[in-house]
Length: 490
Image (cartoon, rainbow, N blue to C red; front, top):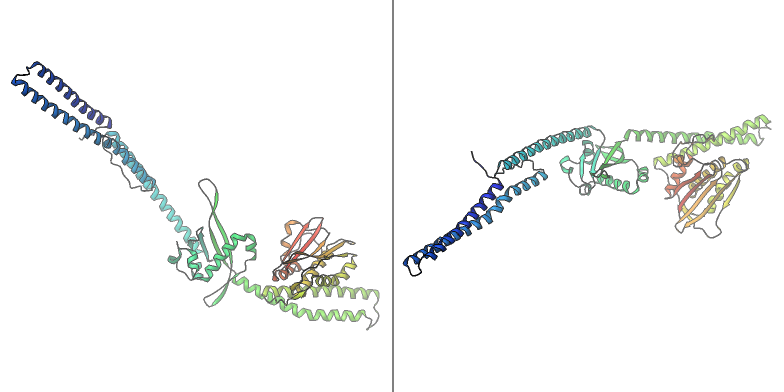
């Protein structure tokens, strides 16, 4: 059985050998000195004794120096070698090289340390392989689920590198999996128009947030000899780091196929447009007949007949207004909205809106006030018919939602040299802040409001204003009234 000395035993042995040589050298020197002292200087034996003493001293001295140098060189390396191997092994483990093993020799303790270290590395290797295997299985499972989704889906990390992409996305992008995974999306987008549009949409989403999402239109894709429409949604991927801080690690791009819904929407728009056109003619005929009744050409009406005639007029005008709003809506939805802009003074728009609503205001004794600056205000390059319709609708709403004997303000102001503000303000019940955006959605009605209407006026008004690169917003508080603001480029 091979016996390996410990560091302590080695140190003791080597130092003991060196000390023994030094002691032997000193003893030899003393003995030689005593022999030489006891011998007569002129005696032949003295020369021989001196030569032998010097030879022995030189031999022992040289041997001591050699042993000392050897111990000086070899002993530190012998002591440091196990610790150096242990340090290197720990570094290998830290670098996830779990196949590292130690074979330290020198003592039972060193061999036991090697055994424990190797057992630890084997356990770590087994755990790592097991965890890696589980991760691979989980990744394959997730990829299988993603590939089974029949809607295109893409995931890119913060560096815009493809992390995963399902088969549907590969089909519409006309790409191959091995061409994209782990590759830069920006480089691929240089030769792929659809991917470039998706990345641009992702940048806008990060820059403008919810405002960009609301303005996002359906994505039209032509593939397999047919048109398809998709709604794009960008979902940020957020993860917690080691310190618990939540950071964004990437984005999932999801495309929902809305082709069937788009077809239904087009069919709905066409139907409404057709019906509205067809209704305008009989409604106009009804109103014309009612007007003939009221001018006594067919005889004088009694009180009951006059009341019925007024009801016919009121409801006929309401129907005509609704059909006009529906036609405007179908123009916007179908993309057939055409603007005929020309230079217009803001005061002309205000005068038109007041004239169109004066009868309604007089009926409820509403005082319409005009707030127009004395200084010069910029002219507008707009489709005056459509913006006048917007102001007329806003003023009509203000009158309807004002209490009797109340007042309404319609005015204009120069915001800066590049923008003109038109506004209508009432002092009625106001609008709950929760509904400030909802009121611009089609067919939305504020809960609890009993005033009749189609729910289309504000939606169409915003569409008309935005078609002029302007904005329509509202400022309102419950009990303090509402102020609708139209901002248009000057």
